[in-house]
Length: 113
Length: 112
Image (tube, rainbow over all chains, first blue to last red; front, side):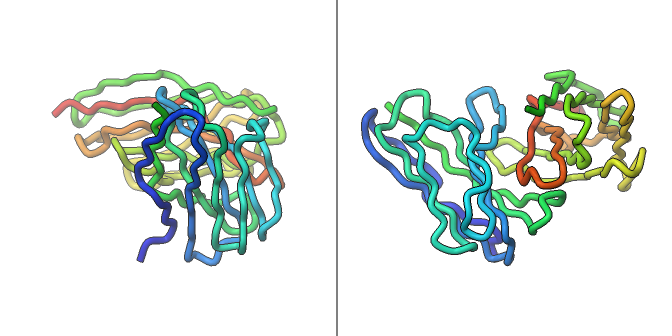
């Protein structure tokens, strides 16, 4: 059974388009995250949700809008895609405390042409 | 905000040798320090972590040390094997933050 899953795995799109990435975890965790990994492999937090409530928004452009319909799902919608949005986006989850293992999804490689 | 510096950016060792990766954090409130391994094209996975109330933790060939005074923590891999080749990330966080701040990563290559 996959603990944290993301769809799609690959996303290729044109500048200016709008796209969404979906994430689901079956671990019963309360906290979910979106991280961005750029071409230099640097991993940076974008958003953190706890029980559907936004906890962290790390100065991400408002073209990025996360949505958590329930605590097992965290989706990411991106409007007006730009070349600089090309990256691998990882969803992750962890139990409530935050001081424990984060389980990452397989990642979504977004390429903006 | 928290800043984590990681060195070296690349490390090449011979199979059987030891490898050491070092990180420095800036926020003295940080109290949790995990290390993640990311193989090519795969997701990051936790390999070991340490909390601020201990100075060292070991799990088979992997150990992590923490110096709170100097705000340093290090990953030690002994008897390296080709399957240890990957990018290793250190990270830190503190109680209540609910997100990790990652170092820039170290690409470890173990030569057979």
